Length: 615
Image 1 (spheres, rainbow, N blue to C red):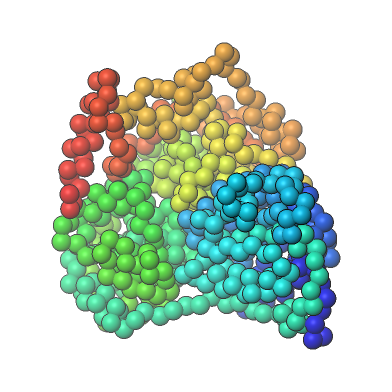
Image 2 (cartoon, rainbow, N blue to C red):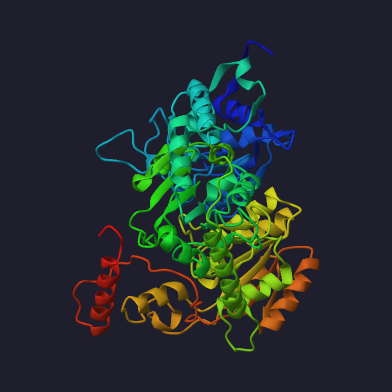
């Protein structure tokens, strides 16, 4: 290779990205599956031309919304368990800021995405350019500074040679299991077009493989001793189990020790739902089987989880005052939360070494059998909740049951915000690792369809089913058109409860009046009759309305044979949710109010807070 190659900064960027590789099951493949792009004056001339030159090595995909294209990129990385990823580029101004929400989503969920927003002129001569946000007190600030708090690494490229160290650092962050998250390289639009003599070896092919740190021997000893003393041990499996591809190691550990497992939203599908010791969902949206054990557990091994409040019931779930928490996590920040015994390690390697350190120890047989019995009881309750019905307005649970019966457990099921995460976490019976794809770390309305597109691109042979409420659908649905354009077939089940039903139920539970959540309770002159079938069809999808659970199952059967994205709409009851399972969640209720319902809810809230261990 030549000692130097004269390229523009944007050309150097795209050539570099095209040469980054990884290995999947022994096969070398590009690390970047492509670049999502919506071009504008801040990136079309520089990055746009550079992407054109590498279009065969690094494909460019056109989307309809910048937030959505970044969601698709993030979902692609998650479906690949962080082994492959994508980039997303926008113009400056609103195009860039549309990606900030997606950056936060990736930051919270520890997922890699490379964001390449255009920026203002580094030379400042044309200032203020179109869409430039001016700070009266700081000439270095642009709209892209909004990415700083939601990026693991942020850099602004103001000279063409700066892309060399910036990309080196970007790759370290994107591929590091502990640091992993969004990287933002803010590309000044004049610098994108400036040339520099880049070193030839900068463009040499590099293969990135995941780092797998093993546990510190002292931390391992303490963790093993804590488990050996346990009478009622429990494992919480988080998303890190899937990212580490540690499901086989977890199954082996569980079968060797007899310790029951429960799963976070991010960790669901770590074990198949039909595994005898998988108690399924834990926490606020948990099963009775999992939460009953969590309340009694004396040692809790938390593997690859951030332990957010939905998992811990706002730290009121674990009622054993003498419990020991062990945090097995590749990120020390997460491993040491809430005074846990830290076991900083890759999930797969940490479980393997912990099993060896336990040296044949098993949990008390009575505890293991107790767990099995609780799971059988939960399965009966779940089957009742998801059974078919002739109700005019079925519940979300009954729709979930229909999808499960029609599509099976091996599909990839995707969802995000609203009421569906609570019901699906408890009720969906996941099969293989990664077959349950939830975005509940940032709970982002509008993620669903764009995320489904990214998953389908990552798993082209999988049947991808997106479940979404009407509220989320109305926020961001444009990538239905993109899925049709790219030939990436999704099956979208749209549950129409005519508003934000989940938050309406929370409003009622905290003493609030029905207000501004359901369409009928919002300020209006005329209630809209939204024809979701016609809307989806207008974007090229096959679309139909299901008028009953039986209709829905039949429509799902037809969707399997369709040649493009299919949207099936069904009306649902906004007030019904599954009573079985679940746990209290800390949502503060006003301390004073003129309304008796709020005062009564406050009294219940105060009573619940007093029961939290440690208060």
